[in-house]
Amino acid sequence: LQDAMEVLLVTQQNSVLVANDEGTRIFGFITPRDVVKALADGRDKNATIGEWIRERAACVDRTITSDSNLDDVAAAMTSRKVDHLAVLRLGSKDVIGVVSSLDILLYTRARAPFLRSMPSWKGPTVAEVLEKSHSITIVGPRGGTLGQIADAFAKSNRTSAVIETAHQRSRATLLTENDIVRAYINGKGRDDLVEAWMPHVEPSFLQVLPSTPLMEAASLMLMSAEGHGKCHHLVVKDSTGAWHGIFSALDVARALDSLPTELDVVRTGVRNTTAGMVMKSIASPPRCKPTDTLRYALAIFGVSGQNAVIVEDDEKVYGLLTPRCAIEALRRAYPPGSTVAEWPRERKRAQGDPCEVQEGLRKVLSTTPLSEAEHIMAEHALHHLLVYDGSDGQLVGVLSSLDVARGLVSVNCQSPFVSLGWLQQIVGPAALAQVNEDEANDKVGLKRCSNLGVDDPKASESARRRQRTE
Image (cartoon, rainbow, N blue to C red; front, side, top):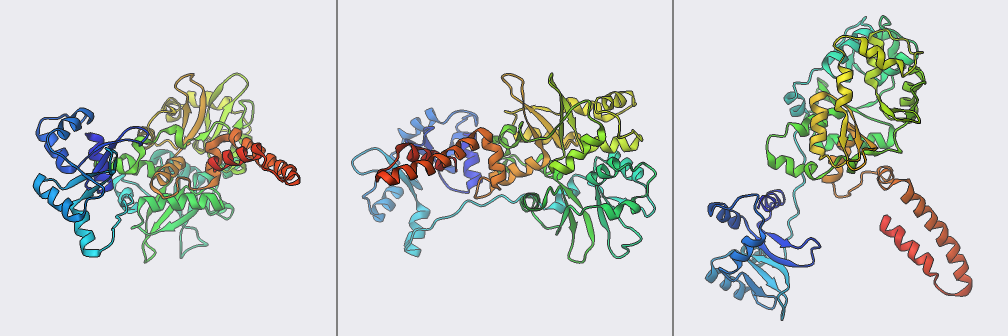
């Protein structure tokens, strides 16, 4: 019954069909009035509807044949005191549809069928998300140092700061954690001025209005990431140019984690989406070795366009290297020429270092619902999680806050994939290799068969397989 109520509320329809798993057989339908009556009769909302719908079917006939005219339908509804009837195929008991009193009203008024599309979920505005999460905007003072900005990032769990420089009096610009990474690997330290480093900053943000819905904000991040590299931040300004804050990819997870009602959570689709569905597969994230230097490992971010590097050797996976590591290293004046293996030992020696605790929170299973994964991200300010297989304990992928945004958009848009690039990551290299092999076989088969004047069955089968993949 709980599932039926969710479908009725999310689709805003007045009936839901009850079918088998394959959708090939219809057993009946449920209306809002049926749900109310079931709850009034003491039915548990978590009870299955199979037995209940059979008991209900014995009470009153809710069927009508497909050859019935509207007068017969209206008369049947009136006499049986029902608003919906299941339409049976003539000469059988197969249900082919449902007709309601509203259908009759709309048809008799408009003389044409009226189809109502399911409303799309847009979510709260970015201004509401920032206000609810008590988001603060870090403002870097003129003459401030990189160390001061890194300290502010570490204390606030934010990943960007507004910087107003002497050369830009009329407007402010944005400094992100990736800019700190580039400064660190280029030998900059705590006492270096932010203003001196700003000419090397690469713009990596978009500007949106405070009224921008969450779904649109997530879509903008993904579109920008697909065309111009990763975009993890949106500057929120009103029509007058006044700053309202900075919306990050992690704020998408914070927004999902703070939805006010169960219905809002159901509408997002994240409860039925798992981490394994939207993660980057294990072949996607870049790698480094424990013997590599921090400078070399962190430089991989810029080359790969990703903000997480898996640290591993031939024996095991040690963890993730993220921009937060560069922030901590710059704060402590840790030399970038040191090895990656030495960095964890340095963190353990530090008192009250949050990074050691966070590493234990990064692990989730591929079957973990996306709603639980984004809760971990939001509660502990983690942008990346390691995804493991529940059966054998093997690392199978990495889930980022941008992947959460991608999953949210994909569930709620007309096309299930935002980009072919993401589709390639989902189907994996083996499937893509099979498609490429099929394309080559098609060309060979078509060339061979064109000389014989017949169809090549292998080429036809590979074409059908490729079409299914597409």
